[in-house]
Amino acid sequence: GPKVLQIPSHQIIDMGQMVTLNCDPVSNHLYFYWYKQILGQQMEFLVNFYNGKVMEKSKLFKDQFSVERPDGSYFTLKIQPTALEDSAVYFCASSFGGLSYEQYFGPGTRLTVL
Amino acid sequence: QQQVRQSPQSLTVWEGETAILNCSYENSAFDYFPWYQQFPGEGPALLISILSVSDKKEDGRFTIFFNKREKKLSLHIADSQPGDSATYFCAASAKDSGYNKLTFGKGTVLLVSP
Image (cartoon, rainbow over all chains, first blue to last red; front, side, top):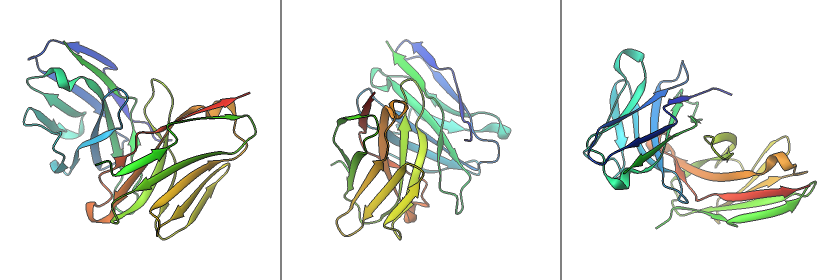
């Protein structure tokens, strides 16, 4: 099926530092998403993004979070500053939109905040 | 309040048996239900999905049965194979969000014994 890539696969940083998670979505997809999964819990929606704008965000999407996709490059999730509770696996997804609802997920980035 | 619930938490079946994974939901606005399969260290992969206008969807060995009145659905995996051993997530989405936000259950860990 369609492939979504995520870089890096693992990231370890100190609390208070900035981190950027990168996502390479499926090439013709128009909608982009970030989900957060804490170990042992279900995946939770963070934010979706279309046409250069955030369309919807959850209460988990704190003020320290931001997303962008400059000039069709990587779709990024930036956390500045990081907190201990940001430790989780972050999954990027993309979809074509319209009548094509299917979201395709990347392999995730495991973020550890020390 | 968990909006999407899955049971059992884990399930073991013998090779060749039919595995039945259950899902229920709270929000009557949900009308699109994808199931995802996730192997350790990988992202969730879309397996099969159903819209609430249907009560059954088949794709090879995988079948979704949907009961809108009871807000329940189930995934049946016929002729289970050891390679089907994975975590299965039921998810839900609503038309009023443009199907752009998935709410996930906590997953069922399936083990198929040879």
